[in-house]
Amino acid sequence: MMFKRRTVLISSMLLILFFFSFLGINFAQDQPKDILTIASVNFHAVWGDKQSNLERIKGFIEAAAKRGADMIVFPETALTGYDWDKNPGMHKENAETVPGPSTNEIAELTKKYGVYALFGLVEEDKDNPDTIYNSVAVSGPEGLIGSYQKMHLPFTENYWATHGDKPFMFDTPWGLVGVGICYDSYLFAELPRYYAALGARIYINATALSNFPGWKEYFLTSMKMRAIENMMFVVSSNLVGKDLNSNFPGFSFIVGPADQFHDVRIYAGPASEEIEELVMATIDLSKVDKMRKHYPLFSESTFSGKPDWRLSEYIEMLDDIAAKTNLGEYK
Image 1 (cartoon, one colour):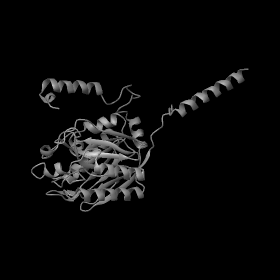
Image 2 (cartoon, rainbow, N blue to C red):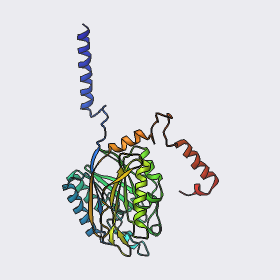
Image 3 (cartoon, helix red, strand yellow):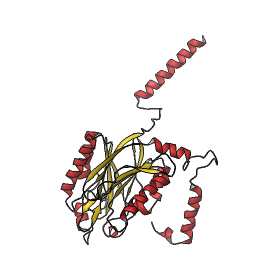
Image 4 (cartoon, rainbow, N blue to C red):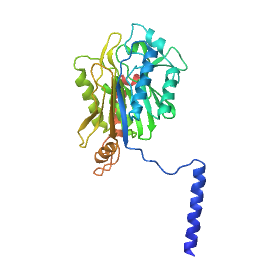
């Protein structure tokens, strides 16, 4: 009798699960995949020649996809070139909304090859065409995902671009991926830390870093530090070659956790300092999980019962800064 009741109960549960499955409701939480092949492109953007740059971006996406890349990363302003020409002219003339003509073409290509691609462009605000942003557009196997608008603008970027005000993450079969652009990554550790605290295991740094004195140590050391601080993989893609006035030194690379807490390694690159080049690595994101479990930045520690990262204390510190300085006035 008991066996019969149990059989009826199991049959009923299976019917209910089938019904919910038919409706598209899935109670199982899929675990993110760990093994990802990612490419970072040293890209020479021809200043002001959007169509030529777009065709070459598409060519690199196709080439990387055929070599097995799941995700392809391009630099800041890859679609247009970086340098400011004393007025908003070139950037304004080449700005596009997202979605727009270029992102539509890239989205069709990522759908065709089933890959993710990120590239820098000048984005026009949908509601105010006079407002433009230094942005990174993201597309995936389902098409356009969205864009990140650079939050921190150095030097002459303030003459043509408007500050973005929101972080940007996107979900993938490998979990969350956070996006930053150049200055965001080098001097503002808050952005990658925000992404890591919400579970991202990868941080994308699309950059236009020029060859100023000490650039190489600055570039590599800061990105290694972001990887160590957050126990995450960092993918940096830089422009290479002559822009309007600047010379960009490439040196794109992928860095991430090794097997010890304070140890990171370069998984791909650095790329050439002179020519276009695609560097690619197959990485194991479970290294992030192992490091974060052993050193619980964002989860409960077996020793203290609290995360090592002191969020509530930092909030109090930020409130104190806002109260005691005029920094709270700036947004």
